[in-house]
Image: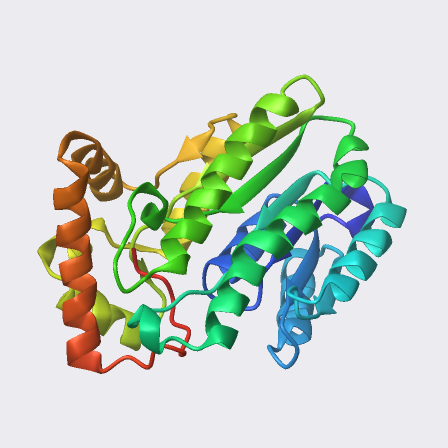
Length: 281
């Protein structure tokens, strides 16, 4: 096994304690990246970091923080910028939920927008100095969603926040195309993360099941395509088919069909509008 000082690449991953973020961490470690892992307090990120470090023989530094707090984001960026180059930034942290907009709490709406939009934009901005220090082209992966491609009733601010990430990423990709930083937007569909998510996917019907991938597949596909310089990454044939169907069908029909699926999910599971769930669209 290689020793830690043989590795020079460094990756920062937000939302790294579980799900897709954890899988990104494992796969980046296997590729030889030193890791900077960011997650909420009490998420066992230190335990995961130790496990990854022992298994892959790499340096792992963990940060527990709430990315909706700008002071914490600023302190994180200051520390990372003093470390030297940052070769890979994966903005994976995000939240969402389903419910009637009128019944959704102000705190819930504010948190979705702060985490999915504000925190991602501000952290990316603050880490540009470290990204520019990479001896090779550095890469930024912003984890959006298939929801970015269509408004969805009962999801309200979540699809809008993911559409922002797509536009934000493409704008920066053009701006920095000659500055040594490549930007990619990743659009997962339904993800198998736990038994509750699996039940929700089954309830959404055959198309959702057809589009479902596990987190290891999504991480592997998106890393491979981002490293190849692809701009918009849609993992899996089912999701690519869904994307083209949304493009070809009338937008009002697409919105109606997807909204009906979410409405049925809410009725069956009696979703609390202020309860964050793993996005499945």
